[in-house]
Length: 248
Image (cartoon, rainbow, N blue to C red; front, side, top):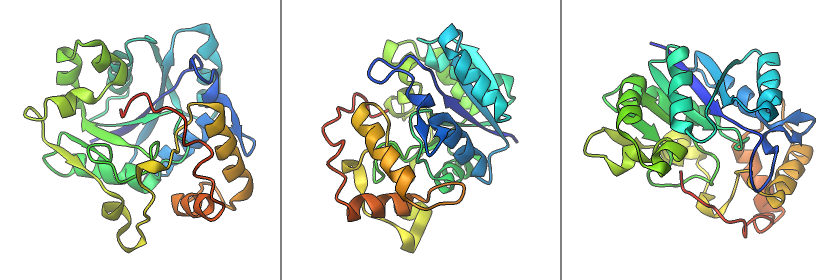
């Protein structure tokens, strides 16, 4: 049994080009992503899935310098790129992460992966019914079920967003949701989807940079400290007008 975290990342964002390589506390966003994936106890391997485009050479070099595997594939067929990355890494359970989410808790990554590894679930995430801030996201699924999705999913939004097929065809899969309380119990926080922790536009980056500059941490900022800092300084409105284009 091999749990592989696959981080999809590219430089070619239309709204904030190069966002996964912007610095937060002196390190590129992608490095924070990789550190968080590695900190999840159940993760055996980390792969950064980027594209063949020359502009993504920087992503490949950064990932390799941090000891991560790199897979390069299609920019448009993200589902195919993710599947091939997981296949090459011989994953039995795949954890999908995205390079623009530098606050994903390692505990959440472990929770969704453990549910898939040690139960009958094909797919587990915190996105089926959201109680988490947007961007504090992790999805896990069996490689076997992902192979079925890769073969059957042909709609453009399936190929671009990777996992909506699971929820749209929930009669074909065992699907479960993970809440904040499931992960943290008595330490749960009440932030919800009104808080954006995903990097899409400049306003997001300005908020994230302030958090990383001012919140004390060792290797990984605890999401409790992030939520508390934003709430204490009333910063939730900084990026509240940024349009969330997809729930996936």
